[in-house]
Image 1 (cartoon, rainbow, N blue to C red):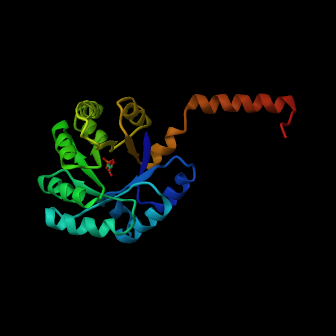
Image 2: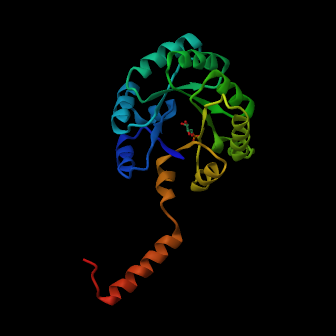
Image 3: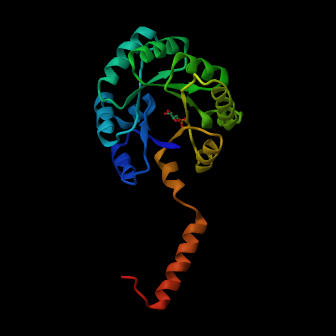
Length: 218
Ligand code: E4P
């Protein structure tokens, strides 16, 4: 399973990329706004930090605008994935990007039917928003299970399932159990993946006992 970082914070990205466990990055207009930086500059900087896919989202609502923006974004670096909203105009743009060999991530997916259309359009990734569905009173993980079943029914569907709107380490584990190809994770949740209170407690005990032996391995 590929793990992406959902961030525009390049300092945080560099820190976590150093673990060797970050396979790619996703961004969105809200994260760009939070960074307070120029989108094209921050995306170029992210692409220089990670070799894997970096999703950069279009801002236009119409197909023609999405195509112009997406081509400009794709020219930033070879690892750019153009992120397109799951709308009719968006999926028409995805079909054209597919024909041009430009990778796409279809975002804001909230139903299995939407995911079916995205795969037919030739999306490289589909991003079901787990946390926002949970917030809405649904069970976000059920959507992942449904999409996995649909995509596995048809050999021609190559779209990867990218679990998004992840809120907890449990979401990441559940997405992996449900057969997601990737998950995009906020930095605080990524850091939480390393931790468990029993790991910390056990390590404290081991270190105290080791100190008591007076030994040294080196
Ligand atoms: C994914 O591509 C999105 O950027 C992100 O996962 C959205 O998460 P949120 O619902 O926490 O804003």
